Length: 192
Image (cartoon, rainbow, N blue to C red; front, side, top):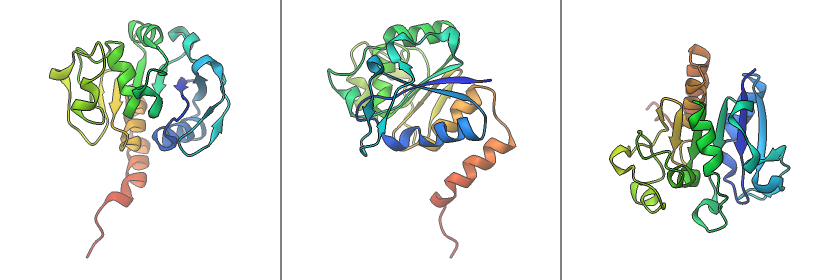
């Protein structure tokens, strides 16, 4: 069974991993583990309270197939958790590492974006992260960008973020394509 660790922080963006968590657990049958800094209960931007399954700082790659960092307001502050050791562990072991919106700042600070294609909310947004030297690999894209086992996305791309995570984990195919089309249908222009 595929096992994903999804890190949520105080002020996490409700919509950024909603498609992923729901479909991973109910449709694809993944074991989804919610991790938070210090294992504390967190509250989303929308006020939803979430209890943690485990402590984010204690995650180890040998127990999971992937690490997903949800965006939110905390990543732009000094209160952002330092997950560099966790990110390094997953990267070193060739596991999926994914970040959306503000969480791309955590990947940038960890050096995970310095030598591979990636995206974020904007080039100048991510350029401010200490330790970031990946400007030459930045892709200005409204969709998620996947480079091997690394997936990044702007906060406005939760559907392609989920899809690229599935693809990176080897779950590509017609079912996934249909799922993406179904949830993307509202963004297609109406027929005249």
